[in-house]
Length: 279
Ligand code: FE
Ligand code: FE
Ligand code: ZN
View: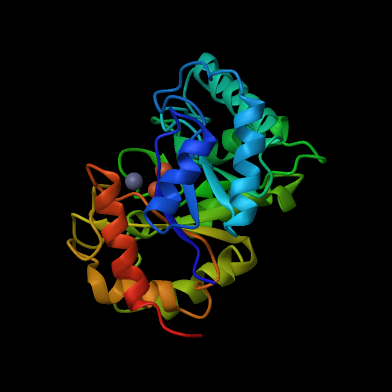
């Protein structure tokens, strides 16, 4: 099955997101767990969730992806900043107990001059404090573009975080095509090599989801500016190879492309479906 969806606004609830997804022929979606700038989360609407779970079952959705606010910094310099990240993630994971088959993706953080090693250590410590053996949710570290002092640009950095986590079975990776391209991994000409490297360093069993984005910038630019599918430096052919690659094709794909409206995502999904090959 081709599992594809896009980032949707969570403001109207889960049923609304489910319907939005169906309206563009998506069979999954990504949503922010709360305001992306990281304010307090709204109370859970359990009726809305129950209705959504039925709708999702009926329509054979693939796994969903919850995205933590991108302003969290688990390796900030100040204790207060790290503590805020910890509490937010902890609270998100409690709330996600109500949404089965949903991964939780977060940006590892920026070490802001403390050094990558310290950043890795702090992120691993955060995970060791929030992960619970009985949680249903697998937490995903997102591959980063390496702008500023971002941790998680290289597969080595992500592997180093995971290695330090006690409950590491609850940790995986979400690969963002724009970010790794901007981070210097040549998925245009050497996708096989990049995946072999991922496997050697992290293990492909850890790869759980793909953020499918084109990039406004060339390979290794460390910028993180997403482009629409086929309209950036990665290009349509390379993105088509990505969705058809035997090692990736069964993963869920999530668009985070700069579309003003749902229709724009719908067009991209139709395009990608037309490029999807039979296995
Ligand atoms: Fe992200
Ligand atoms: Fe992303
Ligand atoms: Zn990005």
